[in-house]
Image 1 (cartoon, rainbow, N blue to C red):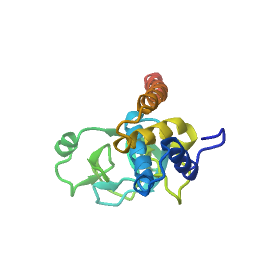
Image 2: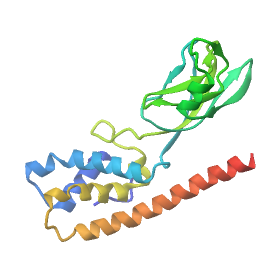
Image 3: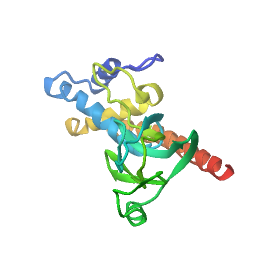
Length: 211
């Protein structure tokens, strides 16, 4: 069973095996997949909890797109520094940017950005210099495996990760009478995390209104 110490990938695998009470190779080989699926589902249910990251870099002169960082999930804000003055770049729709700055070869200081695709932002105007910029964003957690023993889930949501992984094993536990118990425990933990998620979003909105 998981102890009061920080959960690791290896201890989670041991816990899952203990809870399932299964030793057949087919099930044991699926445990990493159960964990991976649980991570994805938990992340989708508590979208704004996790790692809030700030990254600084430089735009490319004449290039209207910026590559997003690895494991980017959601952008919070973006700003650009011009002549040592930092100014916001405002989020707008893709259509707004194309209408506002139809000629991408024309350049100026960027005022707006949008998600161009999952791996890039689109900015407008196209930058007239290699401006320094800063982005605040939520990062997807580095997935757990034998070489990455801990992440946000193991530190702050270990019970959700354990019960979520057990629930992902349900296709192998077709008539297991413990499934309702696991589902109930998982639902209670997720409800707490979702409430924390709502409070965090409300806090950010309150701060935005007050500034």
